[in-house]
Length: 502
Image (cartoon, rainbow, N blue to C red; front, side, top):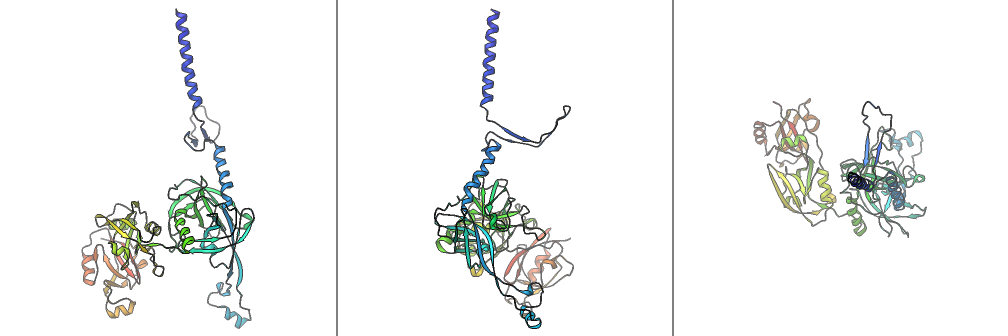
């Protein structure tokens, strides 16, 4: 009897052990990367470790390696080398300020330098089988001849279909067969930390189709190229060098998510230091479509001047958020004025998308179509207000760009006066302009660094300033740590935040 019981227990133990081992064998393989080294048996050693979980797309280092190989083989045929021949001006007076070429020719017999031809190297990406290629405007701008070289060494002359300086994008076209266009991705869904690959022709056409990798270092970088270039750039540490402009930035799936455009340099060295920028493909899609179909970009327009909401402005306005775009001017008869936007409003959402900064608002509106109605949510005072605004067409002849300003942080230190006819003539301002004009600024106060004589103060806090009496009443009742002042300088209106001293 006891033997039978032992036999049954033994069988049960074997069954349980078999089930346990079966579960272990079915578990997907896990790869752990760590720093090797001798361990101390008397203490626990902590080492950096990364585990690729069973749910990851790549369950082994070899699979991860193959992903980059696949990207290189599938995307490089879509990337081209662009060589633009253009006239380069040669002037002696570049090196010796104050003397022009005629001076040297007349007095020293030195012949006046002649314009010479030079070549600009860049990259581009094939976007459809009909031969359309996207690149940077600065790659082909002022080009007399443009040559495109493919991966298989075929060369073609290209024509410019259209350019857009505000995004630094251009579309060119070649007549070629058997082209392989890139697959367009979605830059909006791109996350900081994702792997990306840059492909282009750095430094020389002998280095065409160079492939480098890195990660998305940041998104939404603003004013990295210039105030007239739309922001929201992708930042990456994938190696980008001169010649990569216009080339491809692709994600781990091999989809085009950006057009490489610029690099940050240090010490005058124009080479990669791990900070490069790409135009998001979501921004480029509309530009491509408009340039191909219409030859120009038709951009929607709101009609405001805007600023970022920094910490001081937020404190002065008693805002809980530091995101959004502060409206410093509403253009007369613009969509913004007709839709009810006012100076001092902080735009926080456009059709449900949170506005992160002034350039982000510019990006969100610029990517919309003319005639679209958008829902804009703003903070006005202590209230949240929703407005419906019909977008107009961007007036290229009257560009409204982001207004950037800094703030003084000490007491005012200002002398102001009513705008009389004589003062208006002295400072070149409109005598009918509401407000008070700054006539003197204390030399050592911080306001002197940002404000100027002739600036017009139009609002202090929530009080409109029409004359000197309004100004005196407004500053008499200030009991806040920070105060927001609306200033007009020539045709530019902007906010300045001042710290009120006791």
